[in-house]
Length: 252
Image 1 (tube, one colour):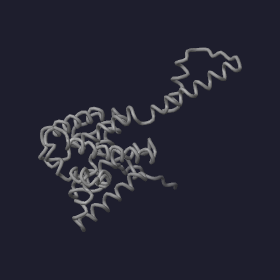
Image 2 (tube, helix red, strand yellow):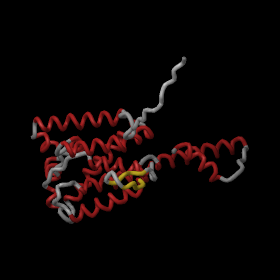
Image 3 (cartoon, rainbow, N blue to C red):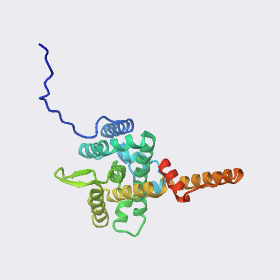
Image 4 (cartoon, rainbow, N blue to C red):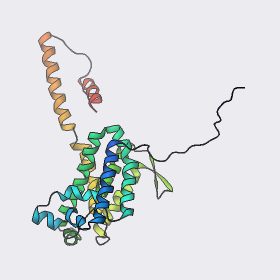
């Protein structure tokens, strides 16, 4: 008698699935840097962002290296878990190259925000100027913003209890981060970097990614089409805006 498989077992899944190439490489690099800093504590002071050192010694490399250092195992785990949870789907949608570029742009932008804040008349600027900043949190906030823009209605469980659409979740943490930046400079958390990651990510995705180049490309192709039409005596029907909107659908 034939025997059929039983489907009584229930399987559960957690998270976005297997690690994508950039996420995997970033997690490995962060874990390796964390272990190295435990073995040689001087690494942290050498490669953290310290505005006073960046300005006086031109240690601009710190704007990259600080992202791979963390202050403890909890700090590392939270950032890497967030990177995996929210970055994996972005890398699948964007591709490894663009995701990696975006990650470093937001991370470096977060560091630069801290530098600018440290020489401004804003609250706690003097304290920030001589403080060391480490962690991938600025880039992670940029990733979270991009996730909310890509999947605005995807629920995120705040405190693992309350489901909130991603777009509102980012608004909430953005407001909290801003208030923390101006009102809690002594907390030890780099709120200015978090805020910088959000701002730089938004500006980059909304205005400075490839749209100016797209507009130039559109103008050039339109000029070529009009030239060809006049050369062969071809007159197009319909509205000009229709062709423009169809072309932009293909490039985005």
